[in-house]
Amino acid sequence: MNWLWFLLWFVLSAFVLGAFVWSTRILFRQKKVWAAFSKAHGMTLTPGAFMGSPQVQGVYGDFRFSLVSEEQRAADARGARFRSVVELHRQVPMAFSGAVGFGDLEQQLGGLDLPATFIPQSPIWKPNWFLRTSDSGKMASYLTEERLKALESVLRIKAASSLLVFDGMNILLRFETSDALTDGRKLEAIVKRMAEAARILFPLDVSAPPPEESTPEPGLIPAG
Image (tube, rainbow, N blue to C red; front, top):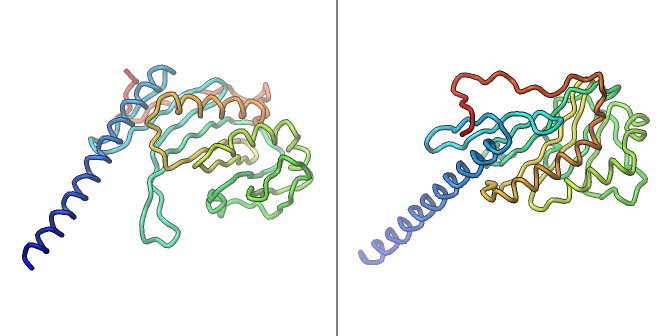
């Protein structure tokens, strides 16, 4: 029977080693692709620890931009998962608060006072989307067909969750996926689609301050 235990040990060891090698290759590919994206768009790169994911921050068109790998605890607190998160943000005066999205991001709205909900009367609206707001009337006026189409273009991206959320002074479009985003062309396409949607979803009031890259924290280095 000793040979059987040895075989089981060998198979388990090979599996663990293989998983480590695979995850390490993914991580270093992510570092390379995110660094190239940061350099191409003149953003700020935080390379992260040797076995940690990088972060990218800066300005993309009319918006403040962030790209991070975020660890999230499972709902039952028994484990964790890593998600690649892309965010476009801008300070825009809004007369009410709201959130529209798809996926499990609704769980992140617990701290917001958004008591009202309704279903927009539009063929674009999908049953698995969620909507919460502080003012149903104002939200109904805001969600024009053009904005619903723009939102749909982001929400329909496969294997991802997206959220549009805003309060009295800020509006943010958030995209997250279990994909490490190690394909540079895919990353560029996702960000481009988000920016195109944000130009319609975000009321770019001329009185709102233009996006400015925040002062890098200690440890941040310019890309490239």
